[in-house]
Image (tube, rainbow, N blue to C red):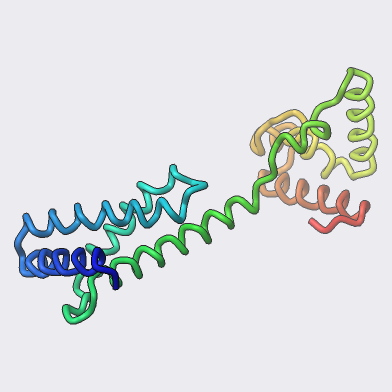
Length: 186
């Protein structure tokens, strides 16, 4: 442990012990000091996501507050604090990577989403209607009403004379049949 870290540990430990004994000003002082060190700790690790640092500092402080009864006074306080911060950071990075892995950059899809002229749009519309024409009316109509025209399930049910449950089932079955035709598993 370096001299600076030893000095920090000594002063912070004394303040924290007073805080645990119920001294409110010491608790506030300890959390304030800890938050400054947490910001520096997280800033070094989240340099590419600086917008997440404050949220993570608050989450860590909250965890410290909730777990203060687990602190053993014969152990270094800074090690305990940084262990909590590391776990919060790992949880944050895992959650962030799961969310990010599910997103495609829309710029990569721009060419596939937009058509260059009206002829391509008409061709695409014709192709979709041709595919849907291969489905029975009880599946085709609910798909056309909900997916192409943007109507609600209730509106499609009213137009087709089917129950709302039947509309949902027929949409699912129709889309599944189309997917199977192209060898895609829904």
